[in-house]
Length: 204
Image 1 (tube, rainbow, N blue to C red):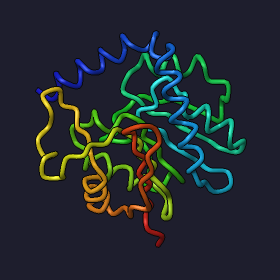
Image 2: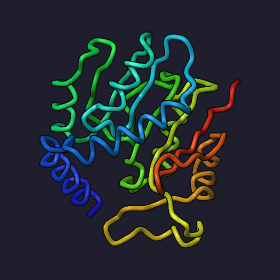
Image 3: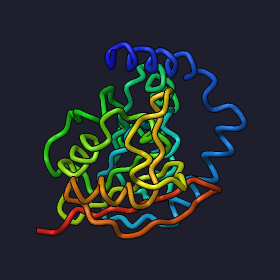
Image 4: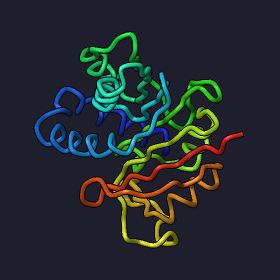
């Protein structure tokens, strides 16, 4: 059942890829990315990962703002990645690979920061995703989680919606992060119900 669900969702995003960056998504994500970038704190010559990178808009903006940045975008939609590669004006600083957030094809401590924008709501195994994020972060590295939030309590969020989309409030995010060994540094509303939560992997 899970396999069929993932296959159906992958096909949906593959079909959506050619028109994904039309007016509304473009304006919407531009506003979110602008506010997110004002909260980003990166080291010199950072190596970053964007989970659920889609067509690569966020990595492009990060590369514009941080000239020494190297970035990897990961997505499970081959067609989204095709569009991202076609529009990649920062090659070889930016690369795009196909894979799943629940099983990242990267080594331990590979990235200074991980970003995830409006993708976390799709994950069927959110705890596993956070454990993978913690694994690939360097000690002291940060995870920038951007997604819609909800006013429901943590106990009301245990069951998935019929569409298998989940929204997490501040408490739920903190619980998931803590279980993965990540410290919550703060929450910031970026646009309407879109909430940024910043986590850090403890320094050794």
